[in-house]
Amino acid sequence: MLCDDCKKKPASIFFKDVSGGQIKEVHLCEDCAKKKGILSEKKLSPLEVLQKLLKNTSHEDENVICPVCFLNLAEFKKVGRFGCANCLNVFEPYIKTMIKEVQNSEKHIGKRAKPGGRRAIEVFRLKEELRRALEKEAYEDAAQIRDKLKTLGVENV
Amino acid sequence: MFDNIKWLISPEFNQECEEKEIVVSTRTRVARNIEGIPFEIKMKNQDAEKLVQVVKSALEMNFKGKYLDLNKMKPLEKESLFESHLISPAIIKKEQPTAVFISEKGNVTVMVNEEDHLRIQGLSCGLNLTNTASAVYEFEEILGQELGYAYNENYGFITSCPTNLGTGLRASVLFHLPGLVYTNEIDKILKSTYSLGMTVRGLYGEGTEIKGNLFQISNQHTLGFKEDELIEKINKFARMLIDLERKARDVIMKRARFELEDKIYRSVAILRSARLINSDEVLNLLSAVRLGIGLGIINFLEINVLNEIMLITRPGNIQLYYGEILEEQERDIRRAEYIRNRLAKIETT
Ligand SMILES: [Zn+2]
Ligand SMILES: [Zn+2]
Image 1: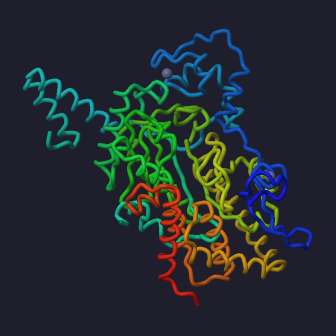
Image 2 (image 1 turned 90 degrees about the horizontal axis):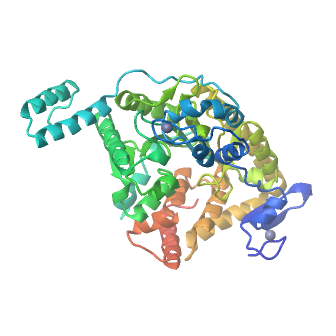
Image 3 (image 1 turned 120 degrees about the vertical axis):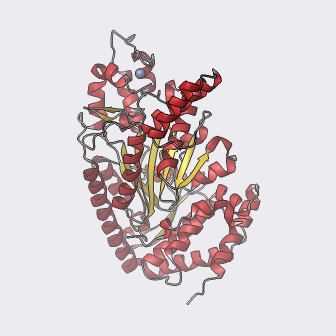
C-alpha cells in the first residue's frame, strides 16, 4: 500500500484518525509521518552530542596522553571513548564542561564501588603463574602457588 | 524443534506482571569495567581473552546459568539472541572474544566485552523496574567483589563512553501505545519525554524504526542521580504514560467503537488464517489484538501468547524454531503456519 500523502513511498504507519469527529484510516510512509509530526525526527544520540561538543573545542595540548593506554586527547575527541580507566583522570580538565553538558550533572551520588576483593582476577593471575612455574619445572614454586589458590577457594588445580 | 530456542521463553519471563497490556517489557542494565584491563578502543586480543576467562570463572563460582561463547555460535543463533533482546547488535559485530551469560531463571544476562567489559541486564515482562534492578544489582555486587570495578570518586563507575558515567544505569520500558497513536497525541507526548530527560526508541534500540505502535523509553542521563531515584523517575513517567494511553483508549471506544472492534477481529482472523505473513505485519496485527485484550473486546487470548508469537516470529527466531535456514518467502510461509498452529489450540468464545 502506498502512502496517502506522497503516494510514492510504501506506507508503514497505519492509524485511525479520530480527530475532528471523523474517523479516517490513514496510511503514511515514515517521511510523511515525520513531516506531519506523527513520528519524531531522529534525535542525536548522547554520544553524537558529545562528539559534536568535543569537535567544537580547541585545546593547545592535544598531545596530552594517557600513560596507561597511550590514548591522546586528539584521538579521544575523535572517538569520544576512553581507552582505559585512567583516561578519565588525564582528560578530566579538558572534558569537564562537556560531561556536565551531556549528563546535566558533574557529580556521582549513586552507589559507590566496594573496596577490596578481586578474587577472580587474583585466581586468574595465580593460574598463569602456576602454568609458567610448571613449564619451568619449578615444582616448589608451583606447590606454593597451589596453596595460595586453595586459600582463595580454588581446590583442584 | 522447540529445544533450539528454549532459552527465549524463560519461566521468569512469563510470570504475572503488571500493566502487561500497555507495557510489553522492562529492561534494566548497568555498565561496568574491570580495573586494570584496557577498554574497547585499546583492547588487544589477549586482553579480550583474559576478560572473557576471568568473568567466566567469576560467574561460575557464584551463579547458575549458561555461559555462551559468542564467537563459537552460529550467526543465526546470535541473531536470535539479539531478536530476543538478550544481546546487543554491538556485541555481534565484534571480532574479539565475547560472551554472554544467561542466568538459570533467564531474567538476567551478562554481556562480556561489549562497549564496556560488562553489561549486566535484567529483563521482565510488563512494568517491573524495581525487580529487574534488584536482580541486576545482585549480580553487580558479587561480580564487583570478584573482579574489582573501575571507579572514580567524582564520576562514579568509569565507562568506555562518558555518556554512561556515574551509575552506568539505563532502564528502559517498552510501551504499546496504539491509543495515543490513533488519537494523534503521541508526538506531543514524545516531545515532552525529551524535556524530562528520557529518550524514545523503536523496538530494537537506537535508530530503529517504530513499528507495531511499540515505543521504548529510557533515561538519558546516568550521572547525578541515585539508582533508586532514577528508577523512580522512570516509573513515575511510565505510570503517567499508561494513564494517558488508557484515556486515549476511552476516547476511541467512545468515538469509533465499531471501527476499532472490526479492526481487532479482522486482525485475529488474519493471524488465524494467513498463509504468508511477514514479521512487520505480525507486529501490526498483534498490536491490534493486544489492544483488543486491553479493552476487554478479546478475552479468549492471553497476553503471554501474544508475547510468545511476537518473539518467535522474528526473522531469525522463526528459522531457529524450525531448525533450518529459510529464504524470505519460506519464512513467511512457516511464520503463518506457526501462528495458525499456535492459535488453533485456543477456542474462540
Ligand atoms: Zn509519504
Ligand atoms: Zn587510558
